[in-house]
Image (cartoon, rainbow, N blue to C red; front, side):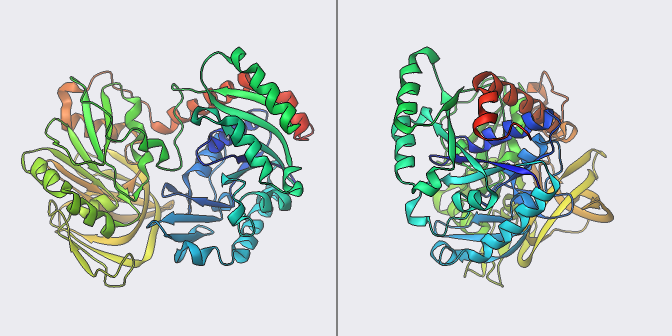
Length: 497
């Protein structure tokens, strides 16, 4: 059986996923068979494997960094928040129902058993499993029910690397406070500390490192600098919250507005725009005039009916409809596609008690939410233009549009040949169920040239997956420059991996 290493954090969004990604690439480059693992993830950013199973996007990214195919075994339990107090539970790649947080945490023993099975299967196959914890590893109110952190580390016999975020401020309190909240059994698993997101002159932090090491009796194995030139997708919307409503229109660039829905999902669909010099992406939550934008995107959501109601309550509906009626390009993906239609029906109560809600009426389409979730990887092409289309579907609804109006012919689902159709494309209104559709540069360029051909310059003819792979290398190199890796291997007892 292989060994394991656990990456835990002092809080959410301290960089656990990024550090785990870097380690996966470093070990893979050293010809070690490595796989990522997270017992329980909470995120509306999810991914569909080649065989049609759903998992958190962070572990899919780490799998790619490990140079292996993603598997639901790497994320046995995925919670997809559909409200402030409830989530859909995805177990072993398939949804098993919705649950409120207080009910979910009453007893997690069954889910922990499933997580242990997934971990053992990975450990039997790989030389090293890199375990990512969830949130803070020291949530004392959840200790008995939290199986993503120390319960998992003890089961896996994994030493722990603790990550702290200095950019948030209070890094000393983060580290010391976390350790003080742990009992001795858990604390003894922590073998080293990494400080993440450091800005400025590292020499000015030497006294800080000395204080941490003297206070905790643990080595600070490295200080990773804050970076802006490495793009690795984040697993939750915390990364875009700080950017929301704060960007300005850039003259001579293609400015794209993305409506920041309360339950936005798979915002990584738009990461590929960031590698195009001519494009600026703006996340907007507060209603504003859209006339200066070249395109408006209504993204995916974990709760179509709730977020559609929010669009109406805030007045976004009038702004989007007016923008479209004046010829502005509106693009809907997944739940956003459903919202562009005439009506969304929920007769089975999949999302709410509300049986029906009118859509924005930009597409002559009716969506019925269904109990069965669609999880497919797809290959196809645009009927108009024969442009290849790749991506994946994650939705619990069926959308019917008038015959002859479909935009994409799908020829493969989950690697099996098929003959199916998806989406809508007519003049300035576009709608698709396909996540990741912009990753392939041919479709991305087709869209950008359609909305603002005169502004689209310096075209990047790189598929996003290839660009993403380069970012893993950059992150791994930054990590190796910032961390005493030989010492890390020694204190984590991984010299013989």
